Length: 128
Picture 1: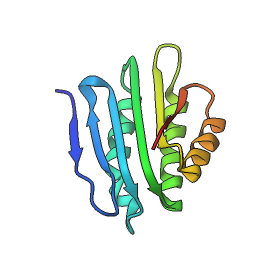
Picture 2 (picture 1 turned 90 degrees about the vertical axis):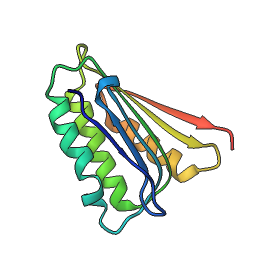
Picture 3 (picture 1 turned 45 degrees about the vertical axis):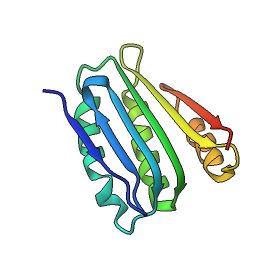
Picture 4 (picture 1 turned 30 degrees about the horizontal axis):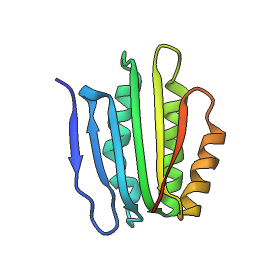
């Protein structure tokens, strides 16, 4: 049975959706919780097992309007894990979605994109 996990956002944590049946991960909102490592633990645990499975594609939509430095470190770790496991047989697509006025998040996405070599990293700019 495919793993399905959904967590609603709070004022300091984002909405999270993991839909293994659709090979899909979504994080949306603001991410600056004090215990951000614990918040992302379930995502990392699932990702560790999923990335070593026989998946064909994985799409990660990341739409954060604000993220703190701790979140940046965790997301970089997640993205580097995805990049390490991406290949011709295992396609990974990241859609870094942000508003055109959010220069900090755009720059963060550009920095992340420079770090990856095996996956597709799209920066999607929405008009605000």
